[in-house]
Image (tube, rainbow, N blue to C red; front, side):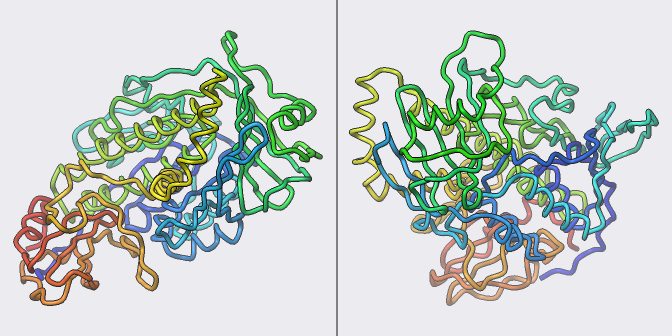
Length: 503
């Protein structure tokens, strides 16, 4: 392998928004040696639960950060291993999550406030502290970066230079508005409410959640801890311009009495809110050195619990690419150009899947509901269908089949863009302080050539069960290319495309 030239110290990256997406973005960049500043106009962190689900794929990707981050999250949360589907109080199906191929075959139920607390602890351990009560007042992008003005709560301002700006600033993103990007989509004309409650009489174990279908609308119950549940209910169509206040506890109780499995008694309201579902996505996740992630780029129904996870995975996708470019390890525009097509395709699929689930759960036609209730147990009884649904829910089915970063795929092997599940006993792909690709080599593969750029490739090679097979794995655990018969030239050509700066 070739020697590496000294890397340059990059200019800092500015992250607007210190929610879970911004915190993950900052943590990923900081551990890869990119200086960051993260600002948010909020004066104090919210203490309400808000997003409560962390899915297996997100746990896999967070595990790369080290420091027992994933283990700390799991210790603080509640592992849920199955999903129940009911209609009019009768069971339709049970979908186990243990069938997925992951070290984390469950959904972790954890209030967003706790998720943020743990992420913040790990970020501060790397010397980065979010600057609260500090807003992004304005910015001017150019080819090399961004000049931004920050305004503090006392009115004082600071203008500084940054290598990039990442808008993790929510559904009403000032960064997106400043760029003039369209947020295409629609607002669905029905009201919803959600809340956290203490309750008794839940007929399912605390490690299983339930979706209850009913002619009036659905009710979803996520167990946060024994006796504490997130309850989401559909309130039906409403021509009013905004959603009304959420029902009181008696109102939620009445809805559960009609729609739920029976026997549930709410005993205390911890938090509640109402909302309208928006299904929207920005037209481009990137404009030059300005990027959008999380709700700034895509919004959809919260009922499936995928919004926060999709945003945190946006952050992971972008961070390793940005780190390679800013640290001077690679020069190809392909790296940053790939962020938008990869993540916009995922965002569109999450919106579509979420929309299908919402429409399936809100069927008003009696005959259509009856057909759904007859067909669903049969369909979900089929292992391939059950596995596909579990893969969509857990986000382990996410892949980048059409990525511009994809290299060759040999006919009998795994396809480029496929997620590679972490293997027990192996260090996660992309772990450590440098975003490197990983090689998996089969028996009989000759040693790598001397001109393989070690600045981009982990020096530790891993086993490939295919004799003669070579797989190159991205720092986020997706397959970059796969070839057979010890063919090193496609690997070298792929690396040349990335523009390595090794001598």
